[in-house]
Image 1 (cartoon, rainbow, N blue to C red):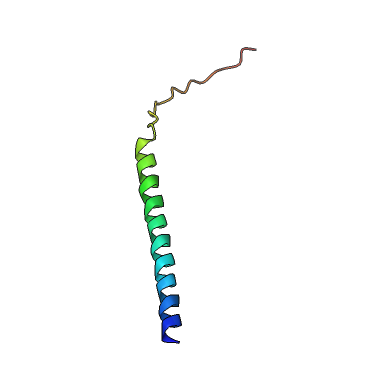
Image 2 (image 1 turned 180 degrees about the vertical axis):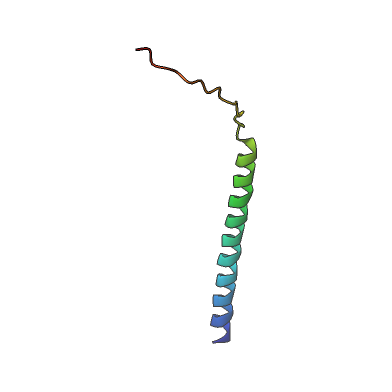
Length: 54
């Protein structure tokens, strides 16, 4: 019985560590791609009032 419990705990620990590694890799890649994203320059727009000629 103790061997089965140890095996279950070992499997749970292995699955948990793999899930944690996947989450860490996701975070690293998300930050990396966010840093590589090209920045868009914010250009101020000139607003001109257009009057309709009657």
